[in-house]
Image (cartoon, rainbow, N blue to C red; front, top):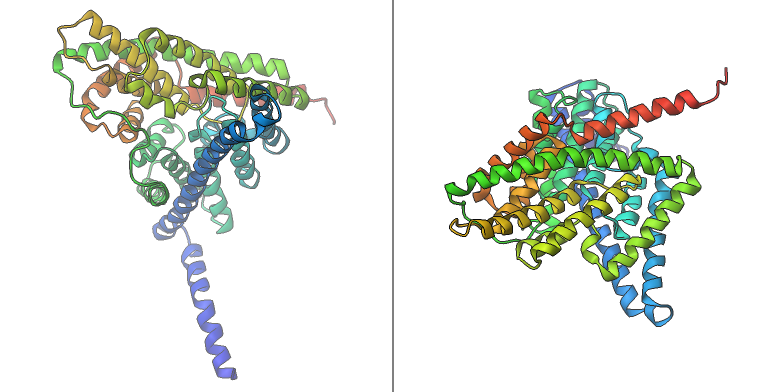
Length: 465
């Protein structure tokens, strides 16, 4: 190659890289922020979709392995306990050893980071949350994948900010929020709900500007395209499609919302109560923490064999409920049972979310309410499945205190767009009742608890000065 050709080749090779660097680093420009938001959405969509596929693979492989291989050598019940205990051990160990901030949902950590009061150690969070969540969710524990994907998405946003050396605090904030929204979109195939979650639920932390909201929309669109390219465009939950209910039944939806408002306040208190009690049990000591995780994992391995309805996030349970496969007595028993298992799993500090378990609880009680209402008012045209869907949104609205997000989430996940009005009525009743009772949003409570406990631990440290 002649000297002239080498110069031309070198110039052509440098142009794309130099152009990108100049485009990104020439200051806090709207174009550069939106360009980086698309990268965040792409990566968060890939991470979230890969996480969903990995959890599904572990769950299915565990079940197939149990039934086809292991039971030839040891009893099936013992194999189930050992495998789930081992998976849970991996999840709890990764959390305690490498990234304690990945315990639980992870959404409060992102909210704290948006307020600049919590760090985002993305190089630790991403592997610990991904593989830790694979372990705990794959073991059958009652946890959802939406919390992990939101935290991992936020971590991706901070990673992109660091890689491209974004200095402007507002831009870093926008990319962090964009990653969180993209993560939720990739978890539930619900782009509108993901956008509204950041705007509504994270409103105390989110800095609303034209640039930040555009960045969130772009990241969410990109993540949803990634998810749908891999998993298809169908709704996450397969359930009957309902027409709008008769107006004379709307007061029943309001009553259901009031009941969920009361339960939502109680449920939030039970969550923090279970966390405090289980924390007092393991005292942040690794041996006790791992022992607790192994015991819970083994227990859920056994439940997977005999009472699978009490295990897992609950998304796969929702279609069975809405198709009327359970009687009223069993619905209420499952409702109480899943409250207990949710408190045990989430309260233990396992890496996993609480969105999906709440949606399952809302479906269980909502369908039971619909069956009872149909029996008490036979003259009214009542479809119990409508109340199940309304219950999903109502419990979310009462606990998270984000009614619009809950409505959009349920509609996008179930593809029941005709139920907007009953969802509005139910969620409004739930939020108003929760506010009247003085309840606080669950993620705000969890963040305040984390900050309080960290402050207490620092005070307990011996004075090294």
